[in-house]
Amino acid sequence: MLRAGLVLLLASSAVGQAQFEVLGRRHLPDVPGYAIAIADFDADSDADILLRSGEILRNDGHARFTSIGSLPHEAELVAVADFDGDTDLDIVVATPQLAFFEQTGSLTFQDTTSSRFASMPGGFIDGILVGDVDGDFDPDLVVEGRALDPVVMFNDGNGSFSLLAAPTIDTTSLKTRTSSLADVDGDGRPDLIRFANPAAPGDRAVWLNDGSGRFSLHWQFPPSITQALPVDFDGDLDVDLIAANVATPHTSLWRNDGGATFTEDLGAFPDPGTPTSNRMVVLDANGDSRIDLFVAPNVMYRARAGGFTDPFVLSGVETTTNLPSRSADFDQDGLPDLLLHSSALHLNVTSDVSDIAFDDVSTRSTALYGAVAAGDVDHDGDMDVLRSDGSLLI
Image (cartoon, rainbow, N blue to C red; front, side, top):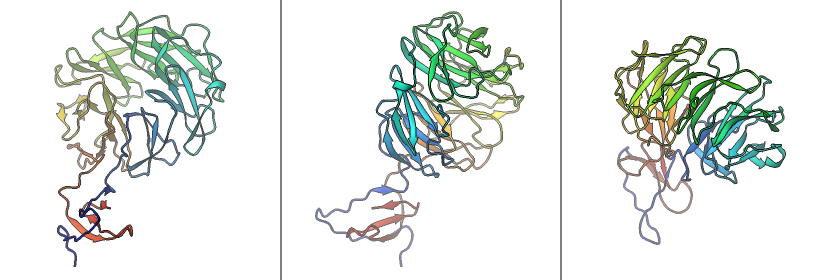
């Protein structure tokens, strides 16, 4: 009878040594690159991953991923949406000019760039945003970059794009840091929240969309703010901003009055000197229907009434501040997980609203496990082991 924790294996081979490969607990394949997009590429209701290398990782619904192929380009900057209206997701990549990859079947992508863009914006593209800028119910592109004013590329509904003739906004910066689209004034049109480095007037600001794809300067951040995430923190159906000041350091909450006028809530964070970075992720980490905040490399702010608690370090979680982290419910358990820049996958194992915890399941070592059964599972003439955690050694 086999007992959990101890099994004596007598294995012989040509080299006289038993070798095992861990199966079942490795959630991410050994492929290069960090995650740059999370989307349900195969329409099976779970979150798949696109890596910077162009590799697409398919989720089996339990946060275990397999590589299904790669785009012919690296994909540092991408936009993902159903651009051509055929109900599956396509990918636009900056290479540094734009390339269009149409999904023509289940996770099969074809380069159809030549038929998609009547003209290209000049300059080096280092930012792509997706939103229905003109209100015609299809996804348009806002493109920006080095020495390149943001420009709108209008979608005709079939995935073909044309440039807006007039400038989108009247400002120029050397390099965009990060921008986002969000309806900050509640008129149903996505507005532009823009950060650039180095910053010129209007380059760290909120720009309102007039509905035609033109944006006007509305409100400017203090010059020390280097990043802001749009999120409805207080549940009043307008977009607030969580901002980072890495020089101080200081994380701040700016509340929206509903008309795109923002006021800093000085009591939202416990200490102006608390950790911050330009790499932040908002998520409801403990399932209490309130917005929590992850700050690279490994700090979590838990939501409280009116703001956030003191920050605490997430044990076993660490990333760098200069590359993005992302969140999605990869294992479909109702709690958001973290995918760090290194493609380290941390599943959310929080069991109590007061105790947020994540488990690194990217790979598992072969040590410190008790075996529960042994046998020739794959019929190759040598012994395999089923461990106590459910993983299989071949």
